[in-house]
Amino acid sequence: MAQPTLWAGVDAGKAAHHCVVINADGQRVLSQRVANDETALTDLIRTVKNLAGGESVLWASDLNSGGAALLITLLLDDDQELLYIPGRVVHHASAAYRGDGKTDAKDAAIIADQARMRRDLHPFRHRDGIAADLRILCARRTDLASDRNRSINRLRAQLLEYFPALERAFDLAHRKAALILLTGYQTPEGLRRMGAARLERWLRDRHAYNAGDIAVRALDAAQAQRATVIGQAVAASVVARLAQTVLNLNAELADVDAMIETTFQRHRLAAIITSMPGFGSLLGAELVAATNGDLASFTTADRLAGIAGLAPVPHDSGRISGNLKRPRRYDRRLLRVFYLAANNAIKNSPESRTYYDRKRSQGKRHSQAVLCLARRRLNVLWAMQRDNTSYQPGLPRAS
Image 1 (spheres, rainbow, N blue to C red):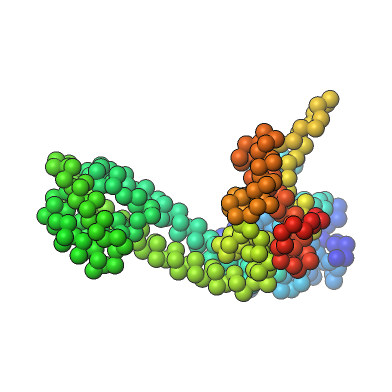
Image 2 (cartoon, rainbow, N blue to C red):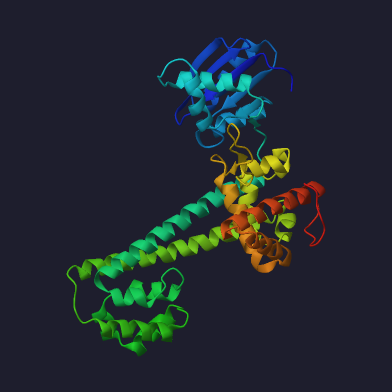
């Protein structure tokens, strides 16, 4: 990249962005609010290029998706250099600039100035199409899983208020048949009137697994409670609706999981990632989504480990040295992927289990040992994608 003569900082928003352009001396040459619209953004890019007079411009944004997605696409399609400056960096850097006030123009100027001075910011690259699809699907799956957990918790709480025996009888998070039961029968009286035989037939007609056991346990719960709690009728109707909601969310989750697996298998790194013990299609898809489909874009394995929160940072002061602590700023998605994959590998990979046991014998807690294993496995995975080879147990790999 040629040495830029102008730096353009963009404080991105939903309806509009604010752009400030500065020169090599840090002086503002443009400050403009622009609508988040293709025509307006294209005019902005053209204006800034004209100000540069054919020389290079370095752009920087505090968002890497969401409302800034259109601007990012237009900049990359125009072969403009673009950096990502996280919002927290802008927030902390603002303390070093004059004035306590906060405006979009000031934030944009800080973004431009940070891009001018710093050399450690991550550049944008054109998104891998499959990785972009996986990012959308994984985000949707996270939303669905959260909605499902929230609905199950609300269902259990509502059922506990008027029919605690039935709430204790089933694990509603893992028994689809129990949810099917609750869509039709939610009260002790209703279950007793139905009887075990008829209830079993009703469940079988709706393809409930192990209908006989479900019917017996439901009738046992109904026989254990004869009292009618105030508000039972309305609560029962709410339970029926919540049970159906959970069933619908389960079905949509299954559909999204299938879409994720199909999409992930088309990615060039899919076979390499899943060859490593502990990685399946879902965790592999989350890894691809979080890294934009290219581990090499992080330059080194150590940089990837730092961003993933797997590299301890020094905490020295004065004569005290050698202290290490967990970083405060890291990508929690990446940490979750590597942690869960390492935890899975302990169960099905002898090498991983041996390493984990050694760390435990050194006095480390379970979570600490898993993090150590995750860091080691990150180096291996990095080397695998670098050499374009699948996992081979027992072979040493350089970081």
